[in-house]
Image (cartoon, rainbow, N blue to C red; front, side):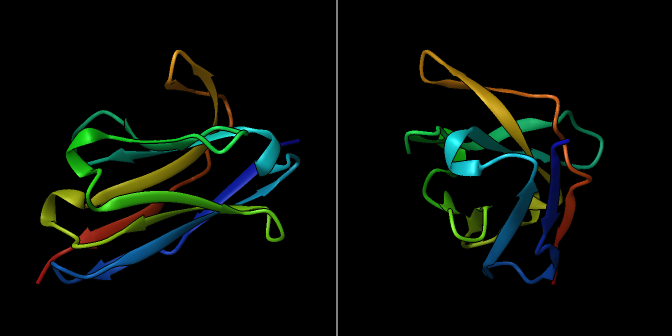
Length: 121
């Protein structure tokens, strides 16, 4: 049974930083392709960052300068670090297992419940 629990969101001022966590059970994150997704209010969920089991990273082009993905094998946790937060970063962030084909990440069935980020002054 796979369980992914996102945490670390909150109300943050523009320009601030957050590190979101995805704590996994039922899988070993270093042995899986993992990805983060963002869903802005009223919008579809979209890919923002992924990391293959082998360590290959990909980040959505429009946020590549501000978002990064990492993992900690000891904590079996995947992270999304967001710097220079902007109002458009507002929304829910979800992690998931993923397929990785031709350099692209495709979501698996293991969505967590998400963590909410609100960027506002």
